[in-house]
Length: 340
Image 1 (cartoon, rainbow, N blue to C red):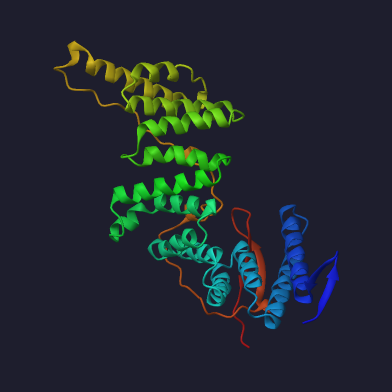
Image 2: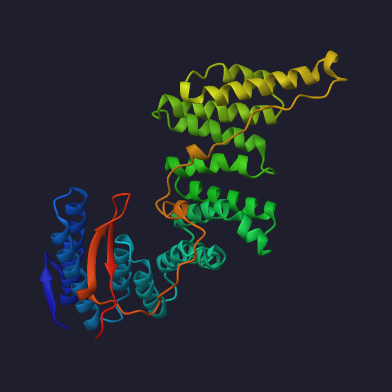
């Protein structure tokens, strides 16, 4: 194979070509995000990138890195079915790549096949147990699709919740400075009824101490979460004092609900209330609005109940590609199967 010398390091000619394709791809998305390309120009540049990938792969059909990169490019422009073809090809060449399992799992989830995606997500943490994001994604997957997994008798509710909780623990342990991982771990105590409440209190205090630069609303949210745990530990006086320090307008309803719960408990424990039926609290804890973003979850949140026919083996033709924008302003490339 032809080799060239660059900056004292020996690289192959193929590696240089692939690097040039990646550079062009990055410029394409930069130009798109800054609206520097009109639709016609965007279509032309996309066609050229697709053609360059295809040309490269015709000469290097077993380059798993190129297959993955091309698959990711196609996913990013809305061609999930065609992307899956290249991920499958990479998987045939090297079945021990966690990132490929992850991409194929995402594809199956988008097709409303979460049960089929589950073993692939398990493989990601088996193949690369030190990658925190794989544990984080699996935890979120278990949170979103607990019902489906229980329905298929893969888990009971409690075993799914326990596994989810452990996944978030692994993610936060591998990356202790990652705020999203720490927050989701602390939140998972509320999603798993049998979790250790004393450890939950420690987790929320650690977030408050380790991330002091968060917004006022976020810091108040941490306090309310601590207060909720304190109530579960029957420490209502400590909970009440903490709740009263919360002043964020956005959290007023949650604050009032927690205070109501404190008062209800106080009444239930008073001698005059022993013979009366305990009033049910109107408190409805919903921390989902505070769940941190996961780059792999954006598509999951948009799942519909509609199954989409898979075209795993359809041929990608670069001369049949057309660019468009969907309603959310995201780039989409439509491929039309033209006769050979």
